[in-house]
Length: 382
Image (cartoon, rainbow, N blue to C red):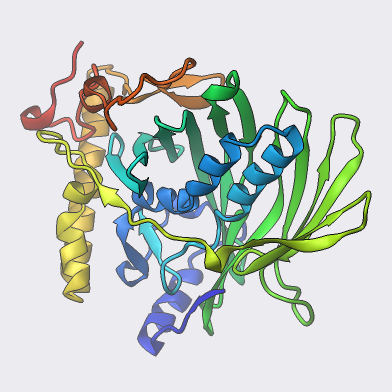
């Protein structure tokens, strides 16, 4: 459970802000106080959800359809416990902002991450991850819709995540995400919870998991509870799952009634995230937000606010310039397909042996323009 105790002066700021809000108000248009900011962009924080890619390495090697599906389900359930200490909000990415990074699992297994802010209104972030040696990739685009709920705030993560096993004839797994809820910003402590009904499905094998993340009731119950059922193609329940997304899960075989531990997220090995810098790209996430991050590290909230507002103002000027010149925004690394943003360079055939972590075309996309509309960094191709 993530929680944080606010200073009294910070609580008073929240109380003042809340008086200006109404129920169900969209919080993406509200300027939150700088002290709630996490020292990284939302694009970078998206990689938290994929902190344990070794579970996909294991899953893709399993021949039995049901056991392989359950292994993918483990990966899905491992996605939610990796969170920064306390309750912080990442920076809202600038349109066109990018973030690249990698995780090294072993000498023969490395995962590359590529993220881009593909839309500002509505705010949509896209991520592609690939393990070329293990022949799998992940593609997701998330519309973050924030909502004020009087005594709490919610972030609804709309969109789907696709996992593809290239070595298994492009076997596809799709899933949705729970919503994030933050409470306690009036009296404290601030607390993060997950809530909502989600699914994991594989159309090729017919298996599906229906998962329910439950928020703690007002008086009774536990925090962070999760339950779910696994169905086969004929809608028969094969397994039931229960547990806590911050600790352990158990699984029960519906046929044999045998119950066993399914997953202990705290025992999973973590692999450091290594940011990948691209020379000549001013819209890399850490470079864009470097001044804000430094000011927050120095506990200079006024200076952090100044740098943050400067970035946002430059983005507004860029939008105005595009409107005046009738120029539409073009994404760099992702393209819109049937309502989702898909990585331009994803493969439908196995990766060649020893292919680079990031290929040249992945690092130097054809369209690379500035959302600020400034000539010094605007190399848009008309």
